[in-house]
Amino acid sequence: AQKVTQAQTEISVVEKEDVTLDCVYETRDTTYYLFWYKQPPSGELVFLIRRNSFDEQNEISGRYSWNFQKSTSSFNFTITASQVVDSAVYFCALSVSGNTGKLIFGQGTTLQVKP
Amino acid sequence: DVKVTQSSRYLVKRTGEKVFLECVQDMDHENMFWYRQDPGLGLRLIYFSYDVKMKEKGDIPEGYSVSREKKERFSLILESASTNQTSMYLCASSLWGGVPEAFFGQGTRLTVV
Image (cartoon, rainbow over all chains, first blue to last red; front, side):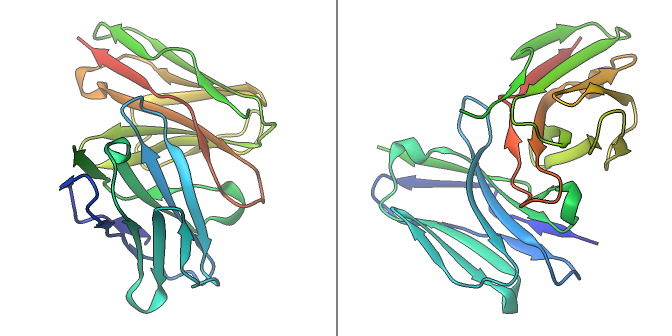
């Protein structure tokens, strides 16, 4: 069975702090994709990043960085120097179903960045 | 700009009503999905479709049906709405056989009273 766990339900930080959102996944498949999505108050899920199971390179995009570790089945997301606009619900997701593209989501982490 | 559009942002319906949630995508995607979002549960898949007139049950299909008569349109139907179907509903689409990056609509917040 496949599963994604985001153990942090809510995180509150003050602007300019760094924050890491945790994601742990379970799958027996050797080929899979991992995703992070952001859901601002407007409601639409915004795609942030995709990683396939054969690429363990960490990635940095501006203030965002992602740490993918197959050994611990984790795909953590770090926001450096957080800003109020980062306040949102963040979802980690897993896709193992190849062509159909079904996503298995974690429970989501609500991030509040206070000024 | 690629788009997935859901017909309503907010809906209020009465218990027992038949409810239609509509979703249209302009990306020529084969796959379309309906998810339900509830606090603490994340997004759960209700139904998906990988071709016109094709549909498969997701994790929580009970109380729902779907229709896909055209490639760009995927409808979610609540045959007889109940209060436990009060939720946020999100539609998504993706390419068949491509990288499974899904694009989402803005969501429909449905309240059943």
